[in-house]
Amino acid sequence: MTARIITLVTDYGTSDHLVGTLKGVILNINPEAKIVDINHHVAPYDVLDGALTIGAAYRYFPPRTIHVVVVDPGVGTQRRPLLVAGETQYFIAPDNGVLSMVYEKEASVSVRHITADHYFLNPISSTFHGRDIFAPAAGWLSKGSQTASFGEEVTDYVRFALPKPKASGNALKGVVLRVDNFGNLMTNLTMEDLPPAMTAEGKIKLHIDGKEIHQLAQTYAQGAPGEPFAIPGSSGFLEISVHRGNAARALGVHRGAEVTLDLA
Image (cartoon, rainbow, N blue to C red):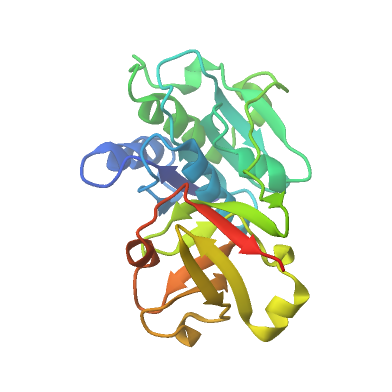
């Protein structure tokens, strides 16, 4: 049997049995599966945070990897479980937009509504579809079940676009999309939004919560100790950081804070 990689992204946390149970279900179906934890600390119920997480990570896995993404505030409702085939990888998730970044990045996708209940665990709990629907679907897919056997293709799946920076006079108004474990503030601004002179000189004019940021660094170590600076993040977005510090705490801001880039 060829081992298949199955990744997990959830908002379950790691303080109870939920993540371990998903792994047990998968391994009971396919003991040869290789399970990789991407993140179990997605902000609870936060579909955007889940979308950003899988969108940043999935392309670094080998072809035929199966990604299970369970951020599911609508568990137990009529929202659909989906199996998505991308260019080289597969995704199993609720139909709530949590795969929006995958839809945006992939040239083409085939999206199926998982209805073949012989793949499910029974009885199905109305509060734990991760265990009873998503994990077993991943286990059977990893054993070679064909995608067509899971259900019919659909085209009306839920997706959303990331909020885009908005022009306002000689400025761009953006927003903090997420705060990582180090307190770095990931904005929706990109390096392409910056005038070439800013990039060349390493200077920037950012305003956030009444505070100004002037340094554009290329590495964390270039940042002046204790002073917030901007830096190109690994996910392609401009981030606000503090060298060996916590930018969110230093600036007193959180996700959703407005960030203004002065272009003048």
